[in-house]
Image 1: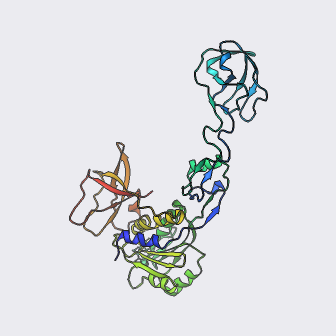
Image 2 (image 1 turned 120 degrees about the vertical axis):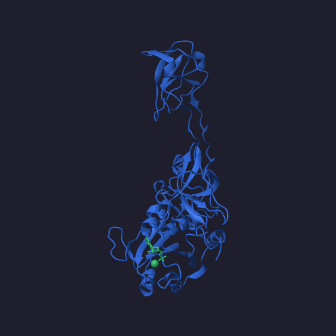
Image 3 (image 1 turned 90 degrees about the vertical axis):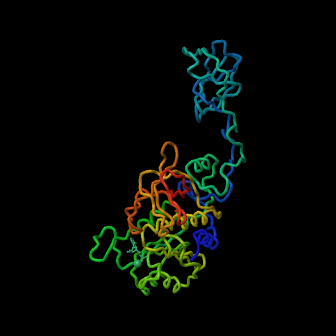
Length: 395
Ligand code: AMP
Ligand code: MG
């Protein structure tokens, strides 16, 4: 059985970053930029007013100015300013030739074409051409995950079709004779399938594309036939049947499909029977069926893998420090568990961690509120409320 760190290392060592596609900005949220994006023009592209007011010459401000026209956003003033003249100007409008300051509206009094300056501000209220960015300046570096500010920056730089990593394609199958869909009422030995919903939501949240999702029975032949029909994918997740029970088919299923086993079993609870295998570019995982195992395994291995597929950069699991809250239930430290799902909140400006009161790793509803994983201390030591701990944020 290998350690969590060794398992993550093995997963990333067998992954290859995905290829790039050009996507419209509206579809590029969350994707990773592949080339440096540079400004094609100066920003602003002309000297522009920062205020609503009057464009004038500073030397004339003691006298009453004569209004000769207007410069508004998108419609500049064509002429040049002569001595004693001013132009009505609005925020974002081009500053006319001959102007060296904008007097803001609040500092003026106007009577028809006559404008008097009541207060002379030392500021010019002119945004100079190129003061934000010069043509050719770096706007968003390659490797950046595109959030709303980065998308807006690309838009302003004229990068309408950024080259980004394509979304990782994932296929998911749940196995289990006991499973019924969420809209059905289980009878007898049945239970509802919550893992399909959990995995679909986690994949969507992490920018992956779910290309197929199937519910299969614990029947090797039938499952093998269904697996052969899956559309192309970068990642295959098999839920349930990962262990060595009589009806645990995942390993045999993958071997029959030509996958090469990299590891089966990780020193991790919940999630110990985790299996990782590969066939060409397809990376497959068999996850123990318990919903809590799914959530833990996703954040420890699958989220870092998705990030690597998109960025080509192996980043360590993020760690934050916080205080263990006095409320909630302290997780057991009996080594039956090594990671515990928690709720991290900000209390008095600092992260505070509340371990979730999970009845068992089959407790899907017990995961409600989970947004952090707490690595538990080695056997023999224990946690106390108020103690500072390191945890893994699970956004
Ligand atoms: P398995 O890994 O197949 O042995 O399943 C372990 C436990 O997880 C069993 O109690 C299963 O009933 C449960 N389980 C398996 N698949 C799911 C699922 N899709 N949704 C909810 N529970 C599941
Ligand atoms: Mg099963």
